[in-house]
Length: 367
Image (cartoon, rainbow, N blue to C red; front, side, top):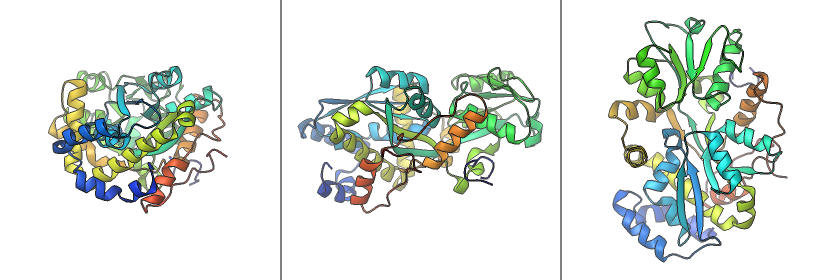
């Protein structure tokens, strides 16, 4: 059981930040306060940029962004600097947008963060905060798969070749002693790369026997008769692993650190509000999902999905390194140099001022 392979075992100024809990209470983060927040933002002091462009996924593991946007918490911290949001369905497209300058900051999973940093030789992005842990499950057809050993020989969906869940499933299968060709997905288990939007339908039609997927896709499959066979969190130390972190363009970070800190204050405040108000936060995230996708999640789906996701400012840096190691072992990535991928000084400045513990970078921070 080694730390390097946990899947086997494994302020704006200080015064503003110190007053953050008071601000959250007195300004009443919540839907009933949104109009007041928009007015404050419109009248507030503009920071060093007129706008900041933020990217995230319409996905429950990105609920910090969903809720922070829906409730106006991030915009409030930005004052007169306007928040502009873009949504993405996959990590590679968000990395492309960051590289092209179409977005400045993004909520994104660990694998695209690693790939983007490695491909640019450490020149395009920094991870500046955590956002969420967990929320990934192996969900199966209980008529065909009753035990973990029964997964052998079956058809299991993952979202995308080389994405975070694909790497995790390949690593888990390897630990079981099963041989799978990572590129083709063929072997002792058949790995079918399937978009999360269609995976529940693929399950209904019987074209897959199960899926290793994030929420809410896992709970959508459960609503169709599937069963959770394994929660990925159980494979990690303390049941924690990074599923969503916050990245920023290095250029934007260098030119507008005050704007970056404002977004981080908003993220920290949002996570605090989510953890203090889980039912309201769940409803807020669902309202934003309805706005973005045209349809809210059903009560059975969101109620099943929400408890498995932890919202945390800690980027859980050691688990990012482990995920990179798993991708290398699967043959999906050449061994990357992740030194400097983290710049947590702005986050730790905010946490320290708020009287909260600072978070480590596992030796992968900017020197």
